[in-house]
Length: 461
Image (tube, rainbow, N blue to C red; front, side, top):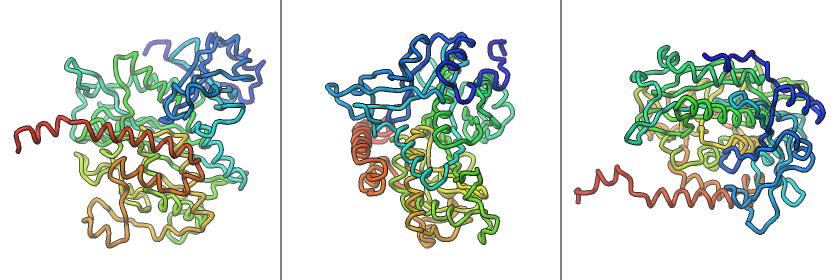
């Protein structure tokens, strides 16, 4: 590795509780010339303006203006008020892969008010609902990704050309031969004070996962956004493509983004944990009710956690070389059961529906809304299912009273549109905008004639 990537852990971490004067001193000490004023669009894609560091005061006090009509999903017309991003000093981070640059997330404001269709604002609103009850949602988000390269004919293949095993999960060689990329991303994150604790080769050729320590929901979403930026830029420098596409190849497992969830009280105690749980899952009555809410709203929730046409190539009942897709479509929960939509790793829950194409702000806002509905209505998730659903026939699954998730984006969007809960919790304007955009995406896909169709039907009739 080159010296420029040999960062000490926490060496570039932003001190806590910065005021403007301390922030200016911090940026000067690290020779920062520009601060990226950032937000995400409806898809969770980072958007930015570069602000010269001598205008930091304006970014924090007044904000930076954007033409909202040029951004997906803000529902702003060209003649309407500007979309303003007012920087939040608590989110200030250096960008080790881009010396001289830092980033700052902000609050999206339109007409002097927080814009309700800004998905980061939406998550903050749901977090505030939890805070009213003395709770904080802690989440550990696990983004999977594919490290690829483009070939001369325009197709893509694993960046490591020797990564060809039929079952490559945890393979030493697959991990070692892309170590430059993995180390550069990991060292960048750790230098910023983000605790990376595991790195592995996943189930598909060219597929990896970098895990960082759990945090409150808003911090987790900000970290995922930063991680995607780092991974994309480091890959680009190496001549690779870091893809978060849910299903890059039909024969491989897809890129999931599992979310581990627990609620903490004001003292930091995990109130999802109960050692006396009769089911042996370590869950409290609160955790069961929260889980029940997620299961109850699972079909509509899927549109927000698996938000693309491609997502539903991952969410299928079927087999890959490893024997499973690792993307369960069964609306159920169980003890360490990776074939159910919700796994219980003891004392917390893991939502396995989401993929790496999701917006982490939107996804977590929706999970809070669904979970709190379960708590408020004291819903019961029923008994846990500790069975391999992939080994059951469809009739056997139905006999257990288990339904499945939507099979296409079109079906999922219809469920979301019909959901009174999400229309109320996330806002009718947002749901209408999301549904409109996703129906357009589905329509474009549905009208496209694929290579499979040409091969299948050209001379068939």
